[in-house]
Image: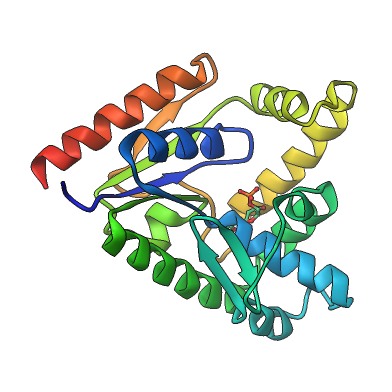
Length: 221
Ligand code: DC
């Protein structure tokens, strides 16, 4: 069996994480979530009261971050998933991710994690710039999209805060704008990426399609 690398990119609420997790499980590959590295730096910066606009200080924190299939680590310590998933950390992660100095450091950590996972059998790596910057050599690159309303609806359902749909939609819009307009590695499909609009597709259909594409790629590896 070939040691496949699959890159899955897309905006918040495009279904990236659910799809990456399910595809990794079905193909027996590791699942690496690059967004967790930006969230980890944001969390540490908030806890330590660092200036979120100090790229050099953030890059130093990034140097202590490690990524693996079982999560993200800072200074060797595992960071619990729920600490990374707060709205404050999400907003701060989007801000810190605009710094090229930090991105450079984290991209190296992400590549190291991907190389290790690939040697162990292959990986599904998800994020915003995996196909364009982190792993342009990935055998399969997928870019997931969905309408802004649908993405906000999914996120509201996921967080159980349906009454907050409007607030979530606005926060998502701000984050999308920053992620796609930043100069360093803006969010966009990589050359050769398969673009899937998931607005009207349920999770199972998207997963089945990505698994099918991955098997096709494995066949030709
Ligand atoms: O996927 P996520 O919501 O966990 O990502 C958190 C933030 O990190 C998001 O605002 C964009 C940024 N990010 C990035 O710039 N590049 C990546 N490869 C992954 C995430």
